[in-house]
Image (tube, rainbow, N blue to C red):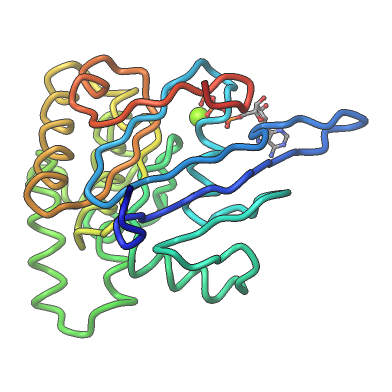
Length: 227
Ligand SMILES: Nc1ncnc2c1ncn2[C@@H]1O[C@H](COP(=O)(O)OP(=O)(O)OP(=O)(O)O)[C@@H](O)[C@H]1O
Ligand SMILES: [Mg+2]
């Protein structure tokens, strides 16, 4: 039996449907799923199977259409937006498939932004930003803006932003999809190190065999259903 205190996130019968014209698309269809503390879990599945939707709902960015979401044992399905914002800011790190960087800000400023909402001490913030950018190998691109960076470099800025404050839960949507193999491996090593050394619970949507190989748990999703 799992100790309930070891459960970080849980879906109970979660369905997420989108209306599209006269159609209704079930991106997630009655999913039950448990993510345990310090797990390195992978969600794999073909394009359009529901992986990004799964991460968005688990990360409280989107509400389930039906079913319930628990974070650390608390049913947060009906919590107001401000509470969900707070939960994300303090507990979660996100690496989005589309990076979601602020185009007018430099790499440094993008990584710094969420920290400005959490810390007042500028020395602490600077240390965290610098370490994160060095960790992802961007020490020579700190003051470039996203438009002046390659796809892989943008991805690494997004990763640095997610990891700068060592979240308790990291959600990563295809974090190595736009990277060459050697950068991919260094990012995977970094994710694994954070998971093993700091116990960061990690859920990655990916079909990258190098990521799947490191996972403690792999689930396959197809047409919104977990196999
Ligand atoms: N806002 C939306 N409105 C309508 N349909 C949507 C919306 N978001 C997602 N979908 C649909 O839900 C399904 C799942 O999409 P999702 O982005 O979760 O897939 P995915 O597994 O992440 O795919 P990929 O590997 O290509 O990133 C798709 O059929 C998609 O078209
Ligand atoms: Mg996706």
